[in-house]
Image (tube, rainbow, N blue to C red; front, side, top):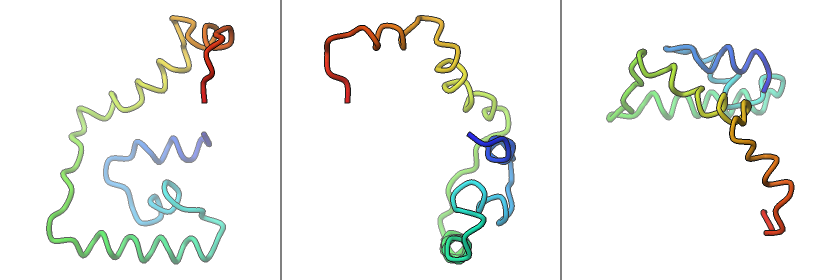
Length: 86
């Protein structure tokens, strides 16, 4: 993942520009227009999604950190298995 994406992904209360980085393609005008439509649609909701509590943010990256560390050598096992993995 790009550094700008990871830096932006952990912002607690991100801006419209941050949404473009996270969910759309910033260099595409068509994608930015789609981002605006999506942003406006979400902003118009009456029942908003519950925001994640700041104390829980640290846990959201742990899955990828465990995957990268691969302390149980799961990737090594998958390379040797004869079972088809799609």
